[in-house]
Length: 302
Image (tube, rainbow, N blue to C red):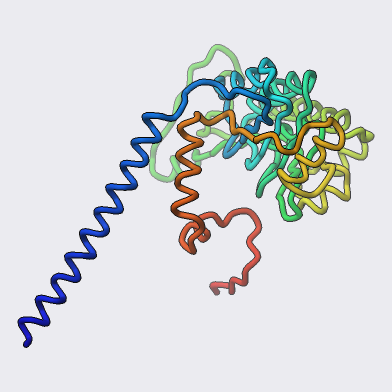
């Protein structure tokens, strides 16, 4: 009796393993099929283009080429820029801003904010004709910062010295080994102030605000989407549906046009749709996706 019971258990385990590997084989076959047959050419027919600016903003020539391609594509009737970024390089953000404004000179551009659209992310957002934020979006952080690490005191304690030979007093400043000289501090503060003036002037121009009003908001602090709406840094609350509604009301863009993520290849788009279909939302991936301001209780650890 015991032998028969063990045999039944083993067969059940074997069936489960076979079923698991069959499912894996089917999934792999579907992925292979999508990769082999999915079209690699451009979108045919009218559509709304969407580009996502995500993570730390760095210089990205390919992204700039994609944005320029939207301006040249007659099928692209509008552009939605979705931002989920804490910012990044000032120059990289400036490049994004100008590239998007070139599109806006030809066709309407809406900006939607995710969890984060701060600092350089907000510079990028200013390029849009209409800015939409979520109520709990973190945005703002209008300002410029330069940081460096000073380890000179630590090196003195462990008996390590540093020597420098330079062509001028300010060459190689700051070097991280010696305190920043007052002369160098003034030079770098001047650079920060100049970049800050550029940033605040851009905000004043794009948001139709007085410069003094902008500078009162531009002390480096961040704002929620609701706060940004009340102080004039964004236009509306919402996301893609609200952006589509605005495109229809203000520019007559058909709301039934497909939204195409032009910064992803056709294969990537099909693969994502496939994964969404078979996986859906699970407690595991919802935990992994938590970011920004989190609405849950967390006790102090002390």
